[in-house]
Image (cartoon, rainbow, N blue to C red; front, top):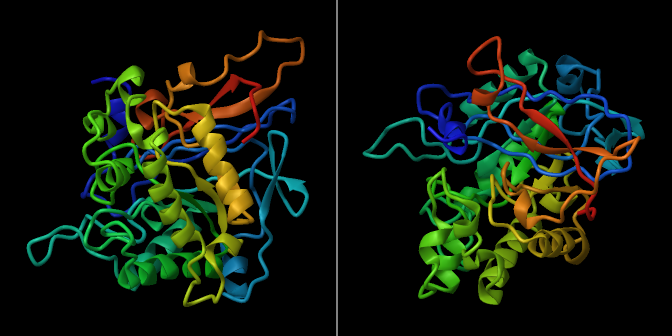
Amino acid sequence: MCADAMVASTRSAQHSLAVAKMLAKMLPDAGAPARGWRRGAGALGFPWALLLLVWGAGAAQAQQQGPGRNLSFVTRSGSRLLLDGRPQRFSGPNVYWLALDENVFANGSSIHYPTHFRVDDVFATAQEMGALVMRAHTVGVSTGNPLSFEPTLGDFSGSASEHIDYAVFRARMTGIRLIVPLTDNYGYYHGGKHNFVEWASPNDPHLANCRLPLCVKEPEASLCPFYTDPKVIAAFKAYVRALLTHVNQYTGTALKDEPAILGWETGNELNGVPAAWTTEIAGFIRGDLGARQLVLDGIVSGAAPLRPSPPPPTPLPSVALSRAETAARQPARHPRFAALLRVRRYKGPTV
């Protein structure tokens, strides 16, 4: 099994909470940008630099303060994440099914919206774990399925948005921040980058390079027009705009202004990604849409060849969080929990 294939090992229908433990370590220098994080089908991925979030108020206090809680936005200074101006750490689960589930078979299908009870239960479980952040794919990756936020090009589903809204509402109530990918590298049930290519450029000769197996090589992935075709990029931006400007029916807040969302991740385990595309999408989210959250670089481990080469080490190197490693690559006290962060020297353009 190749290393990238291992990320799918824990993403199964046998357990309702596919969890991996994210650990962050103190870094010596705040000068480098934080980059990359990953999911691996139940194994967490994680970006944005260290000294992350450990706000010690605790789950009980957060829940007592309720949905009216005046949450602060998580911010960044160099390679540090800050909450209320203080460097923070955090840990939490990867709950990919939070707004669209694949684990309960009924009426001839395993794909359904999760019940409010199930969403409430997973937030309660996360609180008992001491989790402060949750990564939630289907809050942001929701295309090409009849139950998706965008089932077909330009059709934005009200039924899907209710479940997205409820997940964000529960995050607000509990004080657990969400990390939300915006698309996926693979062809999972919740959709991915291939949907935008199929919609906007269905006759592209490299369409097959957009819906790839886990072990795909970087040169093959770079042929996918998702990153270069103007029509495809426009379709993706339209989706991002519709999602981020959507006003939550439970909170009355547009998602782009929701402090319970820690950040928007450009995608899950993207590979073949030109740095120019990441910069363009980050600029669109923060600049054109005015989103108040962080933007996370969602490239997969091993995608560095298409990035600027890092400089030689210096006596005081800039160290930034670059990628997350899968649970299969790290020793763990329990097979569903692992340390998933890899630190590497990198000093490229800040996204």
